[in-house]
Length: 211
Ligand code: ADP
Ligand code: 5GP
Image (cartoon, helix red, strand yellow):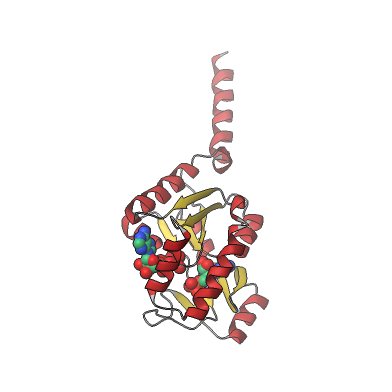
């Protein structure tokens, strides 16, 4: 029986290491597809359109919302971010585990629309380490860093709604832990309803046949 893909949401404070971890996960294992979001934020120096994000204007983003082209979207620090529908649906149908690296409002919308989605939250080992990583990345101004750290305080209030929290201290350990959690999630009974029902029917026929 073909294994169905899981929709995996990965959230975490800005600078926790989500992007770095997702790159490793995709490089190390072959069962994942990473959804590329659409955003109105300006590209960072090394970012490429169609690789990290689809960078669009506010007008294009709002048109996409109207046409129901996004499975979720949210505003984060004054910009729109959203998940294009088509790619996610195609990849899940192909049996891929599809990763959405999105913030908490979007994550909760996904949980509502797709109750079998797996929600993971990446945490830094300490708040000070988070500040160091955000500063060390060197892609945001001190003002934006301050906004992102404030946003982290708000996001910390919603973590209980996630299925698992993973601490990103050592990169390799954390990548392996994420992979193991996703693999285990495949075994939850509610993600195997068709298989279980089929087994019940087979057992009934087997017992009937033996009478
Ligand atoms: P996010 O996508 O969550 O905003 P990034 O992946 O951009 O975070 O990581 C933020 C910064 O922290 C980057 O400079 C990255 O190289 C660094 N970083 C990520 N994970 C670790 C880790 N486990 N140890 C040390 N530095 C890390
Ligand atoms: P950044 O600007 O650092 O790339 O992303 C800012 C925040 O937006 C991060 O928390 C990131 O996970 C989130 N984000 C990225 N894409 C999406 C998306 O498609 N939808 C939602 N809701 N959040 C997103």
